[in-house]
Amino acid sequence: MSEVHKVSGHHAAAPAAHAAETVPYLALRGLGRDFGAGLAVEDVNLDIAKGEFISLIGPSGCGKTTTLRMIAGFVQPSAGVIEKDGVVIASAKRMLPPEKRGMVMIFQSYALWPHKTVAENVAFGLRLRKVADADVRRRVTEMLQAVRLDALASRYPAELSGGQQQRVALARAIVVRPAVLLLDEPLSNLDANLREEMRVEIRRLHDEFKMTTILVTHDQAEAMATSDRIAIMNKGRLEQVDRPFALYARPRTRFIASFIGRTNFLEARCNGTDVTFDGFSIARQHFDLPEQQFSGAVTFSLRPQSIGMEGRTAVEAAPSGGAALRLSATVVEAAFFGDYWEYVVRLGAGGQSLRVLSRPNETFDVGQDVVLNVDPRLMAPVL
View 1 (cartoon, one colour):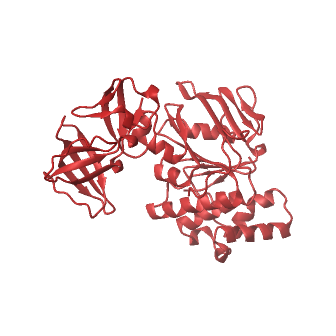
View 2: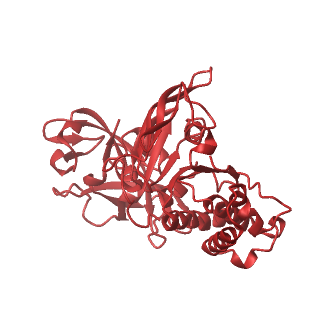
């Protein structure tokens, strides 16, 4: 790795390329790591395209940071290989040193030199590489303009806010023009407002400098807002790799459905013509899903935002016979979060409870009878 930096720490356009469409720039093949107390990472296979922004997320201890450290060169794989541009850079038998991988890693802590100015901190990696003074000055000036810190070039880290210090650390990492930027929880030490500001900044810098970027984070919103694709890990293995919207709308497993956002799980039985839930049925033709996903017992994920809710009318709610389903329910809980209401309702048929999110002006009282509008095409079967 050219230099290791430590800091604390939209989907604008579609990604430049995807691994499925091009030869991967980075490839993890059967990657594993055993620390002696069990596998921390097991059989991870992942292709990353040049210029792609991908996030690794998952619960604590799932192996995401270990995977990132193996890519960086700080941890040697116990199994499998890591390839960069078709060349093996790490395996259980040999490992290319971090400083020769063309990568820069940013950690949670800032680790700026307190006795150096902003400009001197940013210039540090360039001076280590014996870059000519004139080029150092030019690249530092351009970099500070890119991160909007050119007016603070002569200040010291103690005179900066947390967000400004993080920008310095990003500038110091990017100014050396790494092929790959690795980010390990870079925003975890910032408050909520600064995190939101900085995740936009990280994506902007990624798009401007066209780096291949891999982010490890526990913050789902951070990953959703910045990434071309997200790789979700659980117990050392990859559960699903997909674009953010696809992960949210079509999770493959119960774990993914519950880990990304919030959801309702509905159990059903599928036969030749109908999908039968507890208290109601939907004709299977109304589900926008592959034929093989309809057989026997099936669990569906239904997001709270995908359920419409209105006050009970004089006409009893009933299946409409079309794609939309209307169900009788009663509000049993209500909580206001400023941007939305969260309701818990109990279905009149079957008694199952569902969470429903509504806009601030859509208010309902606890105990009120309501009608739920459900589109079966928004229900995703999960394993």
